[in-house]
Each structure stands twice: as structure tokens, then as C-alpha cells.
Length: 78
Image 1 (cartoon, rainbow, N blue to C red):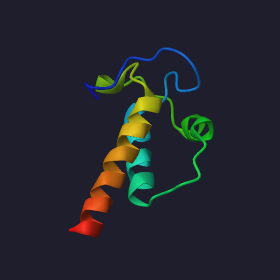
Image 2: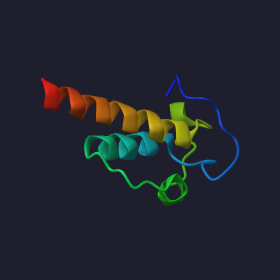
Image 3: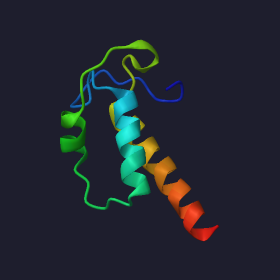
């Protein structure tokens, strides 16, 4: 959460950045191709807890997707 930018606006406002990361990670591992980030962010719970307070849910989702995709690609090629 420390590396995520602060984001106080838009559809991701007050959304759970940790939840966004976890969902992105799972979608990356499953190589989900049809993404609607607006719908994804709107589906998340609101949260202002701890280290994720005011963090960008959008950036968290993308980072999770990237990490999940990289992990599954490495496993496929390893």
C-alpha cells in the first residue's frame, strides 16, 4: 500500500485498495481479458482503514493484475 498514490476523486474514492489489489491479482492470474475498470471499482466495498486510507483503488487493481499475471507467466514458463 505504501507505493500506491493517494487518490481523493473519481469512482475509486473511498474504495478498498486492498480489495482492489486482491481482485486484480486474481484476474491477472486468470488472464481475464475483458475488463471494465469502472464496474470493477464500483463493485468494491468502501474502506478508510489503515494503510489503504485514501490510496488509489485504480492503481491497486492494476498493480495486482500485473503481479498476478507476471506470477502465472513465470509459472507457465518455468
